[in-house]
Length: 64
Image (cartoon, rainbow, N blue to C red; front, side, top):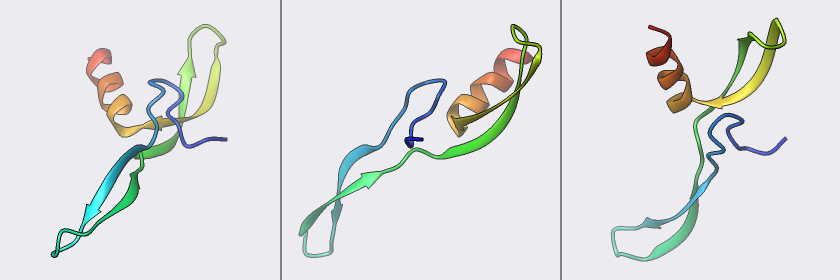
């Protein structure tokens, strides 16, 4: 399975690591993914998904 959020489709971002002498080397900024079990109303069962922490936070906001 790819390192992509299954809810928001977020994936890694390209960036640079800049040293003290300003030498830039390419790096990937990965998404903070967590494996969670979420209750599905349509299927009436628990589903395991890879979800970003930002999406978890917004899900909690919508519930309450």
